[in-house]
Image 1: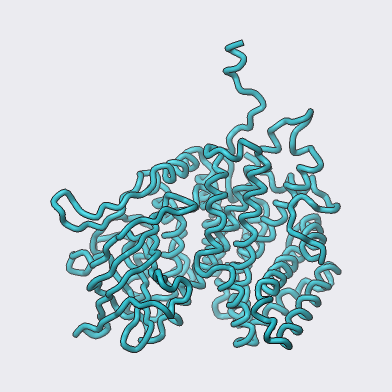
Image 2: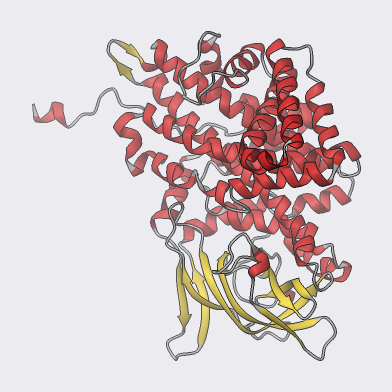
Length: 550
């Protein structure tokens, strides 16, 4: 008897040894469509490493043993350093080495037509390892378009940010092979309303140089080499570049007050900083801080969509893998009709997010195309609002597919569940992004034309989609005619516009069974968001398509 109870049966093998790129058919098809099969082949190495047992173990360890702040050395000298477990450095070294930081901007300038699609797919695939270290990777990617507000500053920093060499440590950038970027926008009294910032920027005798004096409420990755920071200059809210170490080798005045005790990942260090005489360079004109840093915000919003989509994909991978190997009530879970309904529903949601995320990345590649620029302007806040709002529900339902096994830390699902709300908060909450949709529609008429053109390319492919397009335009028209209803209906409008855009992409590019289920469930007036309530469709085929293959 003792021998029998010590042997586990009917247990699911760990999901290890799969390729997070090539095993994701929706991702492969999207990359092939917006780039090429050669780009998929190039990304296979990223996916192969992300799916290894070693990567999974490093992801768990980086969260089990989180960062620690060291404010002073043993003699009492200020250090304000953050120290990490070796697994964090393992993950960062490979993320940077695979070109997932700022490398696409240099590739794009060199003439590569698919640099951002490649990076977006790689970022999604690599994020299966663990989500926290993606924060400094994302901010490094996003810093470059903002730095271009000053040609000299961009020329100084871009090559280091675009490097594929991970070179941590507090040293002058002249002594480093690569650099990472962070940002400090929000303050404790304002949050998203950065107009309430009170951190002061005082000009020095050096042209373009200031000292900063104040407190930053939420600065992620305080160990990075350079930060974009908002502060009040004499001419108003202004953007500044703050180096961690000054050119003469002295440490800039960046005092780490504490690390945040967060809901989600533990691997990334999110901090409060005090600035008192911190040396900074002005980036852009005084009083134009939001306009200057908004390019960084746009790029990080893209990564919020990519990161949320990756969380969904990882969760659905775990759920479908579990169902394909676990027996209950006489057969595999994957053969149970109701479980098929749930899994197919989750898979369709994930595929819709993937299609939308890769379309956004393609729009970044189309930098000189007016349609792509206008579509990017409206689709980014739409997607940031919608995909990030859908993620917590998807991850929670996927966790439930594993039952009690999904509720224990070893499964990896609890981390995904805690992390799932993050991207809806970061870079503007749901309300901020829904209101940004209204702002774009009200100030830039070309963005509505771009949305109509984009979804119109699928007209005639599905009658339900056609009706949804017309209904959404009618809703927009009625709201524009009653301005008092506009703001209170912003989420409803943003959600409908995003879902219709997803439906149009699936009708054009996804397998018929996926597009059919999406249009039948998401674009009908009776949809209440409950997963596993699909009414028809080839559910088995959808589940098989979503199940990882080793």
